[in-house]
Amino acid sequence: MKKNGFTLIELLVVVSIIAILSTLIVVYFNTAKMGARDARRLSDVKQIQLALKMYYNDVGIYPTAITAGNSIANGGTNYLLRIPSNPTPRADNGCADQDYQYKQLESGARYSLSFCLGDKTDDIDAGIRVATANGILNCPTGYVAVPGSSTFNTNDFCVMKYEAKCATVAAPTVGLTSPATANNTFNNASTACTTTYAPVSVSSGYPIGSISQANAATYCANIGGHLLTNPEWMTIARNIEQTAGNWNGGVVGTSWVNRGNYTTAGSALAFDGTTEGTSQAKRSHLLSSTDKIWDISGNVSEWLATTCTTAAYYDSTGLIEWTDSNLDDAERAAAGPSNSAYNDATNALGRYDGCSADSNVFMRGGYVASANATYAGIYQVDLTTTGIAGTLIGFRCVK
Image (tube, rainbow, N blue to C red):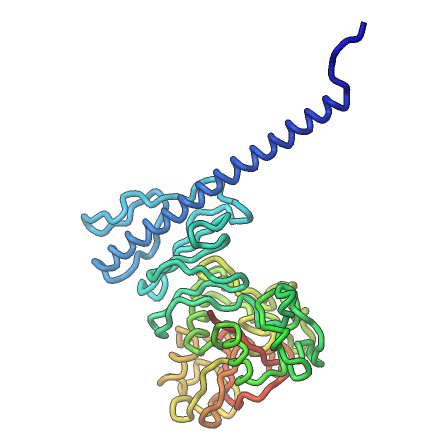
């Protein structure tokens, strides 16, 4: 008599189908839960922004610090009874396991409030995002958010995380290393980064070199941006200066800020953005948002869209420290550190090379193989050139 039943193969097929369905259900619910957390994060941040706005309207500055679970209050007025905490689990799609990160900027004139989304929520993309008094910065991939500055009259902006590299339009995430100059930068004089090529912000590839300041400005315009200006550079530099994690002593003003990719011997780390470096050769700097910007100091110098005049900028006829009294009237405030005692010898912040002729172009950051490579720093400025291409001068775009 024949018995009815399932064969081993049939049982395996059924078990496999159940396992697949179970996996799909788990993935669906995990995604739904992450979406709910992201929606909560966005709602929390907007709630905090509103409370900070009301606080500022009454007090005239933003709070020094805010802490989850505490209130945002002044005197008898409560603007937010309980500051919300980032919902857990927090490490969604690579986000850091941390609470919302608030930082007062410019002695309370501005602030940054950073948070991270696991996935796109409403019209805000996934990843680290920065809220300011003006809204939420939603920077393109490869760009980092920088809160604007009342000191330098800049609005919030997004700047290339890496110095501009060249990539083919067909493969925009892969920076090119050929053709290369003798200094291992992309030889733009040999192959122009236009038409089937475009400037990009990626870690791989060599920074674009052998490009004039005028062409750098054109390249940024071609991708819907503009060449970084000196006020924008200073907004970044002051943000870095006021972020404790960039100082070797862990306290603003203590010891030194890393110079980036530099060496007095002329040899260096790889010119692409894949090798971090240690001590003063560390190549990334923290921003108030907890995001990082690479090679703002060292590696290659960078063209800016700003020019100088001898009437406004002292002609130093050589590199001098920012503590020089000739820079007291205007130069340090416009292009140097916030503290008149900060210098290069102690703080590794770079030096000043003055405006030798009207309409000379700002070149900032210092470059790796310079005879004065130890003077690379976030406040290094060279005002002695007319914008002619050099193998160790690149650029960065803003959107």
